[in-house]
Amino acid sequence: MRYAVFYLLYAAVVIRAVAFHYYDDPVPPIVYGLMACYGIVLAVEAWLGRRWPGFIWIYLFVQTVLVTGMLLAIPEMDFLPSLFYPLCFQAVLQLGRRTGFAWIVALVLIFSPLVLIGWEWQIEGIATVLLDGAACFFVGSYAHLIQRAERARESNQQLLIEVQEAYRRLQDHAAQVEEYAILQERNRMARELHDSVTQTIFSMNLTVQAARMLVEKDLARAAHELDRLGELARSAIGEIQVLVDQLRPRALIADGLPSALRHLIDERYRREGLHVDLQVIGDRQLPQPVAIGLYRIVQEALNNITKHAATQEAWVCLNLVGEPAYLEVEDRGRGFNPEGAARDLHHIGLAGMADRARELGWKLDIESQPGRGTRIRIEEAGNGEP
Picture 1 (cartoon, rainbow, N blue to C red):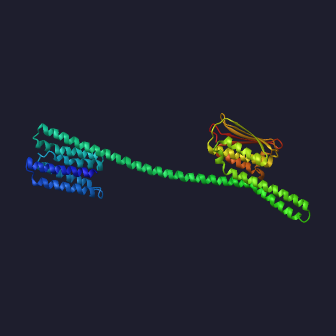
Picture 2: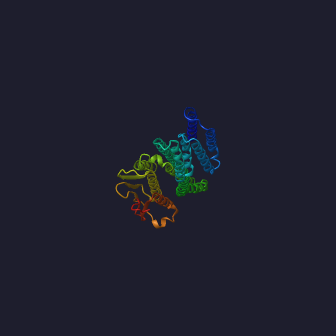
Picture 3: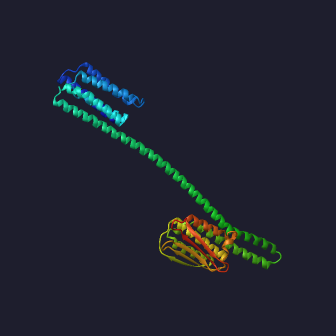
């Protein structure tokens, strides 16, 4: 686009020179020759300038000499300094602001006395010099603005590339975090399978072996073992259902954690006859990852009560008022020794609850004594606590 403007300007000067020849004074042939050379160099610069960075100096020098030669040949053609406009533009654009404007000053100093001579130092000549000089500086300023815009565009492109790279790294990190979360979830599921279904199936296998040994000796006891096998199978099915529920907590959390806990308590009552008294204080909305984590902790706590506490009653309290929020699960069952629980395979679920609490940034506290029940409290960490 910029070269199209230069070509139009050049064409206008050529037409004005022809008109000057016919209506004012004859134009020497050398002026037409210099003007033709100017047009050729102008056309070559668009092609050669991209391939030879140093060509700009040759270009500016040659064009300046050509225009100056025209003015020396016939100073009365006061429109010739307009051929300096493209030079002013290209000087600032390619040489930078300081060098480019220095070149513009030199051009103005070159054509000013020649124009004044053509006007015989009259007031019209001074006005022409001022007009052409202002136009040269205006064109140079416009080139400087374009230069800044191009630099800003390049900077924005580089920034876009950096943002895209950062976004890609963030996606990679998110994928790694998701993969790690999946791995953690698999580890928890493995612990829960070991703590529930695996042991139940192992007991079923022992029962099958005992029934096989008794089937020919004592049919009554064999029938009893088969009945027990049926109970174990139903228990395994229930435990598998619990694990399946753990895999879809997001749908349950959609209506909020209190609603999900009520659904869980109803399921445990229908399946196992466990009576759970739920108390919810406040209606503060928790982030979904936190709500899911608390939901799963309650699941695991109720699993432990069903399997180990030897009681059919429990209490769950979710307090969302004030700081910190907390969740408590309590029973009046047989209890246990917390210090020895970590070494007991029957209490692997406690490690899972501790892991979940740590991932949420909440604090887990377990109070229990043999024969006096268990209370599990998970509390929102505050005051910068991890």
